[in-house]
Image (cartoon, rainbow, N blue to C red; front, side, top):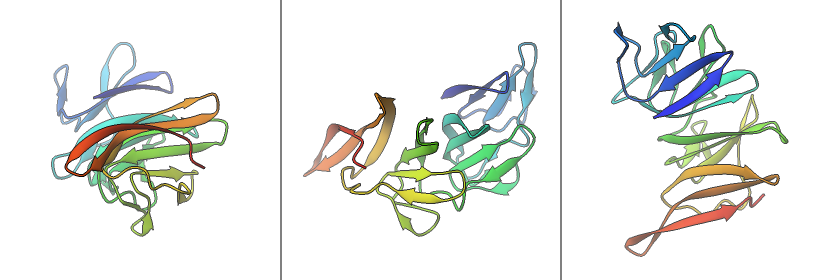
Length: 178
């Protein structure tokens, strides 16, 4: 599903348990140019899958559908520092589909199918992680179903996804509403 370079190694993640004969990688592995290796004990949970990875504050963030990263409880989002996994607050209440680092503001945008982050903050499919705390975007009333794409352009966040319109989906793209 996704690839990311972190600390000189290529990380591959998705839905797989074996890569190049190495078993038990649990949905994420790293390539050093010669050998594939496990990333701790990987990403696990009920039907686990990784959808997105992003480097933020010198850590590799992983988002998807999972409950556990390296034996640590992590609801749909986790971070890897090169040695061990950590949770990202209390995570999200549903899938994380896209991660995007904003280097100008030093924040991580997180989007997907979720309605809340940190078990209590209403977020409406997109939220912000500042390295220590979760916040929501002001005026975030635009998406009803999921945010599946994000990109920075000329200092603004552009987000795309789906919103219910009566009984059909309408593709939507919005510019930063902060």
